[in-house]
Image 1: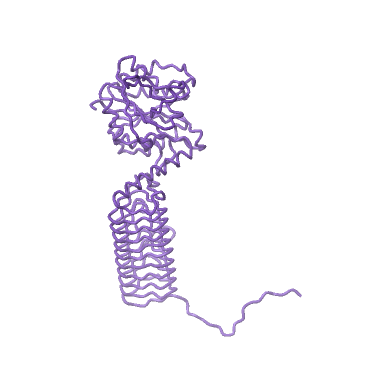
Image 2: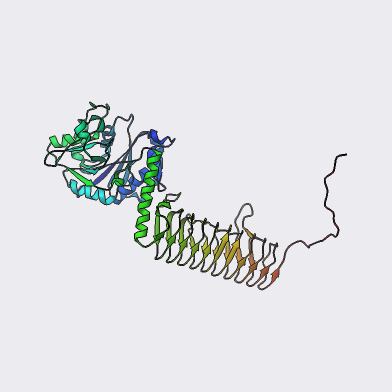
Length: 476
């Protein structure tokens, strides 16, 4: 390919069968909008431009797509509108004014998210500089798809749509995927000749195939066997089926690298809520139990174990760490990290900025936010550590919290090495607990403590002998 590449993406459909207030192309697969999957592929092809044809919900689609594409897309992103929607040919007609005449156009659909870049590269090689290339696939049940009609020599002659096909043509199992590559210099005049004289009363893009044959432009069919790459989405059921097929493919790739998945059918890898692309990198002998969800960028070191039903996002899990079931780790922008041999959970929550050292223990119903725990520190039960710096071998008692927020500003708590914090304590930041010190259970600490000291700050216990509890009055 020497000609500049321009991607045309059809994204104007309403998607009535989705039964959603949102346009179909913004429905999410693996945490990413369908249309964003297609645009990501365009970026991999090093396209000069991407022209997105919008219609139903155009303003919403354009706003979401502009935000999602970002500055690093690598191509010029433009939008044109198809109003009203009069067929696929009419849609591409709207894109013509946005195209330069020297390019090769690849036409894609915004609801077909899983076409691979290498497949499209093969399609472009088949097209060369002057041919039309169609991406085709053989389907056991081709109902609803346009059929590829070839002559006796096997050369593509035309595409016939389902509703216009006769019985012989409907028996053809090779279908047109909706994806083609065509030189813009040919595409533009062919689009101008389209007619809506057909069963649907629409302008079919597929009619340009016969025009190419008439004009002597070679038409080649690049056939693939992977139906998943050309599968579209029209309903919640199809979206769910495609999601599971996509996730199973990701699971198999991990298992081929040596990852142990307890059940590949119960595994999910998704973009995160901010659009951070999904990336899971695992070392050797990693075990992942059922029902786990990984979002954004996650790395897991050698021999680490991930228990059932964990949600891990934008985090680094070091070698030998054990993440017990139902743990939630979300590093967001700051990231989160778990050190070698650490034990986390079950039912623990690590929030952005949680940085845990080697052999750290974070137990059930413990929350850590924007805090650093040095090697060997432990918070085993029902505790909160926010905006804290915790030294080595600290033992942080059940029910204890750092009171890090004064209603306007966040403040930091420093707990130095070898401190023991008793149960049900409140450490009111900013405060430092000196190395080797002990804080008695139930204390509210508002001032710095000395190293090695026992600090107790609670009301004196009073016992009243022979005290009678109040009793309910009885009616006379």
